Image (cartoon, rainbow, N blue to C red; front, side, top):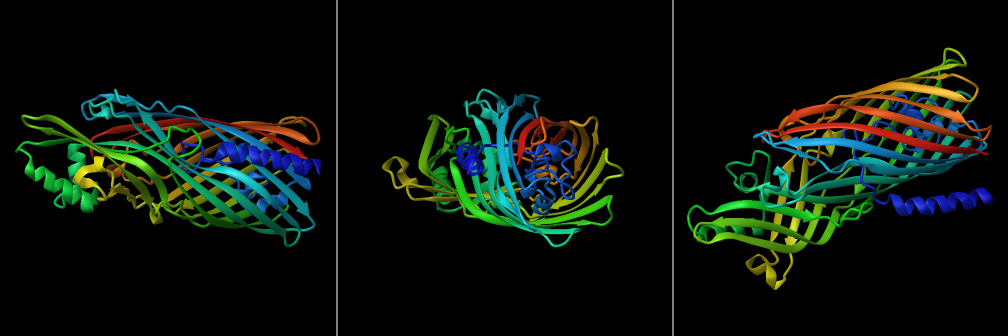
Length: 467
């Protein structure tokens, strides 16, 4: 009863602080690893015991836990370094430099079955450029994103025999998003002009009304900017929110006493549209002889068809002796199925302040055209003393974003990581594990001539209790 009470209190606390913590991930929008045991070894996790992080890695490894009950409580800190440099050479440094990510898991073995509950941040993206930077377009417009996805996971693992474990999970998903995005007049016209539309497209009754208004203004009228704004300023919940479900299956098989193989498949999510009512779309015109004319429209945003992709993975774990463990995973993340475009709809309210744009609709799409991503993760651990285990590894992923469509608000570009960490047994029942990750900086130039650099330093710490 005491253990169940501990679990309920921890779950309630973490549900409150995790929904929806913004993250900056490094294998696309996924993290380079989940749980410090796996992350310290390059993120490889599919064929050996890596604690209750199994629920988000390969649920079949839950059957390898060394005790009948295990509780893990973890905290991660992610430190991105992002800079966007304009074609003229002006640099804007992201002010979002630290994100905190809690996680927890609890597992129980009963006969040949292992079950429990896990709470994890899946991943996301985030950055923030001050309005005084060049990204503010000279009008002090802050640009920022916070995209995050979390999972509450119920796993069930079955030991079929002494060599084979199979498992599945049911995942409840929540997603959140904040967006402050300024577009120059040239960028906005690329969306609305059917003769252009190189980077996206915009349509709807609001576009038609906007074009009609421009036709009535003096020749030489320019669009200074268009500004999409839905954000609540809350570090834990995005303004646009959606909920849904997904699932995983996995297996672990002991080929020999020294070699184990693991495999998993994670389904794509089924999320509802992310809804952000009561926000604003703004634009400003430069009219000859009249100066600047700014208009802010009140209304509702909906981010359409936002989903997390499916994943397939195969892993190996080799124990040459009682001291060493060598692991390797290969994964494919099917971004191509879910990240072809970023689509949102804005519906202006009927408020009198919206003038002729009342009840008008704007459908805006930014092209993404992400490719599927292939990830290779390798690592090793060595038992240095009875209490201390040292771990190290590397993680390499292919580039999934075409340079042309890379957006400095969505810079998911890191490809190479080095990882390290250790585990220390406090006693026979309790231990701590850590991981440290260095994501090597990547520089890319997009179709607008903007150079985007992204590097990252991350750390995780976990306390485990077995009983």
